[in-house]
Length: 288
Length: 223
Image (spheres, rainbow over the protein chains, first blue to last red):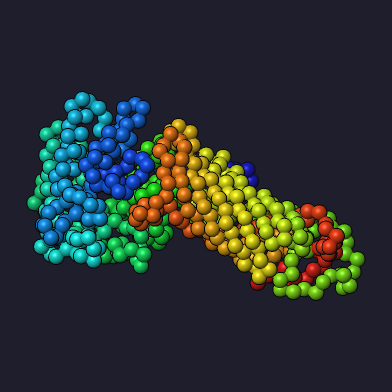
């Protein structure tokens, strides 16, 4: 009887114990300095400030950044922008790449850690699915190809610098739009990123319709060789999580503001990465 | 965790039965018990104008711990409850609620409240202050009416985060990105065991205990 009880408790404990691997902390929209302020998303200043976040040991708080690429159809420009809602000029996406490369080069030269967890620095390159202020303005086939070329140019610029410094790098192309990811996959066919640069494709899943029009079901990505899914833990149903597991997809979480629901989801499911706008709070939570 | 919750619920139910057995024997249920109605209160505290109650606050979502403890009091239709979080011992995260409810005779309740959740951060806990709004439905009573239940829907809005060596963050509605993660819905179930608090002369004194052991099962049914 006692042995059965102990066995049962042991099984329960093993089932409930989360993985010991700490999720990689990715800076959401290149802006994870608290307090979270989406108005600063995808700006060069916020990106620099986010990269410069350190713990008391001088390690970066984050393990990577997400940069948004926005194809502006009217000007045929590839912007570093979340949308076109903010007044003023938007830089080309190369501006973000320059900031990241400069920061990595400087720290690498100084022998400083590049990530909190000591793994390869990760850059998530999100391709926004609309080409104007209105979300209904979708890419034409030509615009889709140009946007994919732009995203791949980001990989080339980051990859060349990583190879030159002999430091590992992980680049994850993400989008809510499977057609854009498909275009990236095609554009990657001619790219040799080298041994040090890992390249992956990731689908984004967030607030479902009818509340938001961006999120599509997993089957919409059937023609894309997905490696990764980045999901919002508040809005993902158990069945969808089971489907991701069945497809053997790497699962990460994205969020705007961490609340108890978010933190408990991370504890319970231990995603491989967490994309957050609150680097210090999440780092504390992950390291506790 | 669900098994633990079920065990706790059974324990409370058992305690409720024991309490009912301790009540003075009914003199004559057929002459003193009021006729059962669909809105009749339970045979114990619920028929009194005042009561204090303790209970379990259960949920399956991840907003707070799945099991917390209610301690409260009721005056007529108005109910104040403090929800405590003993599961802070499991992960150091604690959510404490103060709930004010209007429990109508129709079995439909309105709820407002405040929740403070503490989460460990670098320089002490971060406090997340939440406004709670909700509505509940009274559940059928059981354990001879000793236990009353409530099922409800709750909106929790994180109004401000502060402390923990982090900058204060106040909710903004400038765009969906500013607030979408800070407004969350949840369902809850509460099960309470109550004691009458005082017996005002105008109240139907002792009617509750007199019917406790002989009340038909249907008496506890509420809409």
